[in-house]
Structures are given as C-alpha cells and as structure tokens.
Image 1 (tube, each protein chain N blue to C red):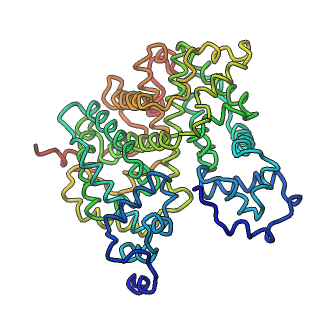
Image 2: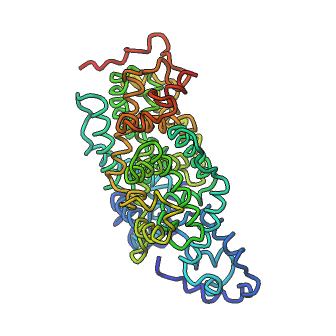
Amino acid sequence: MSPRAKAAPAPTRRSRGSLSQEEILAGAIEIVERDGLDGLSMPVLARHLGAGVMSLYWYFHSKEELLAAMAEHAIHEVYGRLSPPGDGPWDEEMLRLTAEFADEARRNPLFAQLCGWRPHLLASRPGVLRVLATRFDQELQLLLDGLGLTPADAAALHNLLYAPTIGFVLMQLGADGGADEPTAAEALEAAVERLEPAEYPTLKAVTDLGALVALENETYDDVLQLVVAGMKAEYAGEAKPKAAPRSTRRPPAGSRGNGRRSA
Amino acid sequence: MAASKPSATKAGHQRRARGSLSREEILVAARQFIEQHGLVELSFPRLAKELKAAPTSLYWYFHTKDELLAALIDDVTREMYLHLEPIGAGSWDEEIVEYHVRFRAVLGSSSVYRDVFGYRAQALFGRSRMTPFILRSIEDDLALFVRAGLSPDEAAHVFNLFSVYTRAFVLVEHNTVGEEIDPEALDLITFNFAKIKADLPAARGLDDLMQIVVLDDERFRMGLRFLVAGLCQRYPALRRAASTGRAPAWAKAAAR
C-alpha cells in the first residue's frame, strides 16, 4: 500500500504542497501537550492542521511512524540540553544527572510520556539510538568506575535510578485534578480532621499532613538521595557485603576494566 | 474535547430503555473503559456510548463524574485492601519492604488501581467510603516508623518516599498501557545496538539489552533495600531498630 496511491483520491482542504513535515510534527506535539499521547490520532491531527488525513499519510505511513519521528525530535531537543557527565564522584554526578533529566522530562511532557509508555519508539531509529546509547554508556562508566560492578549490575542500578524518575514525572504531570477539586493534601487534611485521636494517634500527631502526599520535585530528589546513599553503603561502604543480592556477582573473565575511560 | 457530534442526538432509537441499565452495570463498564482507555479519557458521553445508553440515563444513577469516580474508587480500594495484608509487628525495615512488595503486586494486577493510586490520590481521601480504611493503613505505616524512633512528621515524610518510589516504579513497569511492545521493534533495536556496540566502552560488556530496561520483583526489592540503607544512614534510630541490629536488612539478604 503506497502512500502515494492512498493520498491521491483524497479531497484535501489545503493543497498538499502547503503542508510540511515540520508543520505536521509541530501540530502533533501541540496535541500531545494538550491531550496526552492517547489524544493523538491521524484524524485528530488532520483536523488540527486543517488538512485531509490522507495528506498526512503522504509523510507518515502510520501513527507509530509519526510517533517515532516525534521521539527523534524530542530526544535531540532533550539530550541537546543535558549537560555531559563530569569528573566528580559517581554519586554526586548521578544525582545531578538524574535531577537534570527529570527537569527536562517535566519541560517536555511528550518526551516523558514516550519514555514511560513507548520506550521502544525512542530507540527505533539508529541516529537516536546512538544519542541514547552514548549517554547511557557514559553514565554506566561512572557507575562501573565508582562501584566496581559488572556491566550488568551497573545497568541494573542505572535503571533503578531512571525508571522511577520517569514514573514520578508522569505522576506529577498526571496529578492535576480539576481546578475546583481539592488537592490531595486538602482532602487528606479534611479526612484526618474527622478522625478520633484515640484510634489514629500517629496521624493526628503529624503537623504537616501534606508531607504524606507531596509530589514536589524535592520529594523525589530525596528518594534519589537516599537510594544513591543506599547504593553507596551497599557497594562501597564499610559493611560492604561480599555479594550483592543478585546471584551473578562475578564478572565474566576479562570483562572488568576493559572499559576504562581513555581520558 | 468539547464538540459533541451532531449524530449523537439522532441515535435515540438505538438506545436502551432506562430501566434496563443498572448501577452495577455502569460501574463494570466504567472499569472496563478505564482498563482500555485510562482514567483521563472517562466521560459520561463516551461511557454512555459503550453502554449503548443515553448520557442522561447515567445521570439518573450518578449526578456527576465525581460521584461515579467516588463509587468506582470505593470498589477499587475495597478490593485492593482486601488483597493487601497490613503491616505486621516485625522490625521496620523488613515490614516496610514486604508491605511495599505486596503493594506493588496489587497495583500490578490492574491498570485501574494504577490510575487511581498513580494519578488520583486526592480521590482516596475525598468522598470514598473506604477513606477510613486507607487512613488506618497509613496510621499503621506511620506507627511502624514512630516505634522505630522517628517523629510523626519524619515518619510522614519517609512514608511518602516509599509510596512515591513504589507507585513511580509500577507506572513505568506497566508502561505500555495494555499494549505489548512489538517484538520486531525490539529486534530492530538489538540489531542497531549491535552495530554501535564497539563504540561503547562500558555498555559493550552487556550481553543482553534487556538488562538495561528490565523491571521485576528482584529489582524492585533491590531499590527498596537501597532506600532502607539510605535511611539507616540518615536516621541513627532507624539503623539501631533495623532487623539485624546494626547491619541493615540487605546485608542479611545478601548473606543468604
């Protein structure tokens, strides 16, 4: 099914030549920022652009292909702004890099949603994959050098830092209720107000109930602080255990150290 | 979102009689709708369409979308807390890890749970009849930390960190919203990755790309143990109260 054949008979509201790939991408991004990833469809996009659906298929054969192009656009934007890993201690560097990543994901909801829900699309084009893989490799090296782990274990830690970061940003982006709706903190305060102190002594003693439901950037910064401190304690601290919880501790022969940074 | 289709008014003859619709049926359909399309997409017109009923006949049972959501959240939380064994009387570190392992498992069993707990926390404390049960569970969590030596406010903060970590983890773990990732797409990524692997000094040591992205029970527990170990460092009281006296729980787990 060639797009040319599909596009030809469609009566379009604008002439085909007046639509550009950039314009389609920009329109698609507008829709996702307004209605989320689920709100995007080829017909919706066509209406948004005042064009016929078939003229979109001229540029993108499917929604998946459109999404892949959007992913590429988002990645170049986000990764173009992220600062490179520095020479500081691994824990400080990883905290800085994940916090920066979270900020970029907040600024770019499309990127956050793609990370969370269509991760395979992010890496489906070779050029983008190289951008992602190069960055990942630099951060993996930080963990390898800092903690002396196998690449597999370092990758596990890397994932444990980034996956919940994306999940948290999605929670933040999705948590907005209606304007007239009470916030979680307000609803909780009202609910605790009605409780019997004798039955709920601890809840009644909490002075800042908002802390129970906070989704502030600082909330998650603290999760990361503690997780990184925990990693440090587990792998580099005094009480360093011989074996990590995973069974495959030992690197395969020759795998350790062959990835030293040449700089 | 706003524009209603003109055809909707012409569809009257296809609608079902009002008496044939029940409150339960609406709730079941709403659950199915959320499983498929997510909570944000839920609206009376779209739900009515699924039920082949008029939107107004839904208003007969639920005056507002909030009222429908409150009823739905009652059901959802009742089920969840039925399956979620409460915090026990053991040491804080073991109890908190096992509780969140159970919490993750329950959240993993339905996208409706994840939608509610991930994005609509305010609804849990609002009009739900389950609110006292939810607060009971939070009280138990907080009491655990207070017994271990934290102040109630410190306990509230730490409680939220575990809650946030678990919900964020689960949202990404179940990331494809009901859709499986196309195996062909993964093959393509593996293929392309193999071509650039030589340029990646650290990552070329990985024999399986899934090591980068896999999220499972083992990794979840690992993250919880890091949180516990981090807390042991910050709060000496928690360190002293941890299951093995001075050594945090992960040390014991690792020694097995």
